[in-house]
Image (tube, rainbow over all chains, first blue to last red; front, top):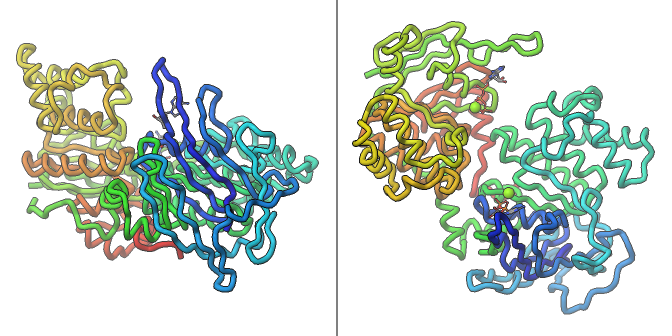
Length: 335
Length: 258
Ligand SMILES: Nc1ncnc2c1ncn2[C@@H]1O[C@H](COP(=O)(O)OP(=O)(O)OP(=O)(O)O)[C@@H](O)[C@H]1O
Ligand SMILES: Nc1ncnc2c1ncn2[C@@H]1O[C@H](COP(=O)(O)OP(=O)(O)O)[C@@H](O)[C@H]1O
Ligand SMILES: [Mg+2]
Ligand SMILES: [Mg+2]
């Protein structure tokens, strides 16, 4: 198992109205190649800031400290061997990989999660820059260096509000074709053909006529399918979905989550799934990171976070979840 | 006692030459002190029903009986008096206010408009209202934009109960809140109901929330009632296609990845 990105001591501050907001405080975590990692937390906890930092999309006004190192030929260039000590233990015979202890505590609040086992996902062989048996070539690059991954090409981004990522006056077909044309070196006819294929892959009804439609003519769920098609058009290694289903009703949400899961598996992408909904995160992710007030509270395997949370805040989130099996708050009083 | 009875409610909208029935022959009743939930997918007509019940839009057909009156026939002073008994809380109801308006100002309006407290009494009435929703009087001078989302929703509830309503329509009133705050607001609603016998028409797409706080539920699909009944009975064993789809789509904590 290998890190796609190693985030170390990441702090982000914004200056707004003259006052400083510490949006992220010393976050350290690895994004493992091929995994579905969920980042959960309540509003204002710093989830979107983390996503934007990883994608290199923070505004110039943000003050960033710490590092994000990328591995695995994210930029498609030749790779250098990583120091062996940095590689986690591997037991290929069992098809399992030891996950070394997640990031060391940066602040007093972070609790060390136990060593955990992460099954090799079936996508592993499809990830580029890898060889058989788990031996992995890594290529570090750092924020500020030249080899950072390019948003749009190496990293696909899906936002909560699909309208924010779609141009209201451009046809659906053109918007997706443009990504393919820009990043994949396709001529326009090829780019349009690719766009139509992508609309089929995201299961947009009538992809042919949808190519000529404008965003306002589609429902919220359909717009989100288009935004996903645009996000994956250049074949990114990493897909970041920031509250991508939060504005949708539960039925459409379930469809979009299933679509994301399928596309990530087919294309061997790594998924960063950002949500305020711990149950939704648990359905999709292999690992969950919990953040609160800009700090990493806990990170671990989904089953552990859900059944044996270590941090009181994680327990609070779990207890506040009102599932279909929760005991009712309503004490039956005759009306 | 039946507090609200809607019968054969229908509302059609024209859109691009086509007419769609946003609400299509819907009937239900709410007893005093009862919570009836409306649930259904996006576009199923929940908010349209809320607007019809509140008389923010007029129906194409159907009747609304509220507190024994034909609510759609009321006019002038009689309508204003009845309106005081029927309040609403939306997802972000205070978004419509000037964000620099103070909490006191927001609560002053209903007390003044419905002549519930004289000018001299109003500061004390505002303090009492804040206490009824679990806030303290020192919040009164604060601006709406300075308080948290949970505090804002408490102020919205305080504003709604200022006129001692018998029914509050809540349209996705807890949907935008963080889960920890959501639990507190739901508890507040239940406490108010227990103490003051307020009935709720509680609109939500979240079946977990509906099951936790509603007595009965009406499931809507494309403007029609798909099924209705005891909230837990319906959600635990839905019979309609939309009920089954909604239950299947609800995220579950203990079912990790397939
Ligand atoms: N003013 C309007 N003009 C035209 N169509 C409308 C209008 N208001 C509502 N509709 C349509 O009526 C239907 C029901 O809408 P409504 O807002 O009641 O749904 P809802 O159940 O509240 O959905 P949501 O869960 O998304 O809030 C939808 O098809 C909607 O597009
Ligand atoms: N561009 C910005 N300018 C100023 N403050 C910001 C900006 N983006 C985010 N923040 C602040 O950073 C904190 C974290 O925000 P965000 O990452 O959006 O949280 P989340 O996505 O978890 O809701 C909040 O206090 C927010 O107000
Ligand atoms: Mg966010
Ligand atoms: Mg609505």
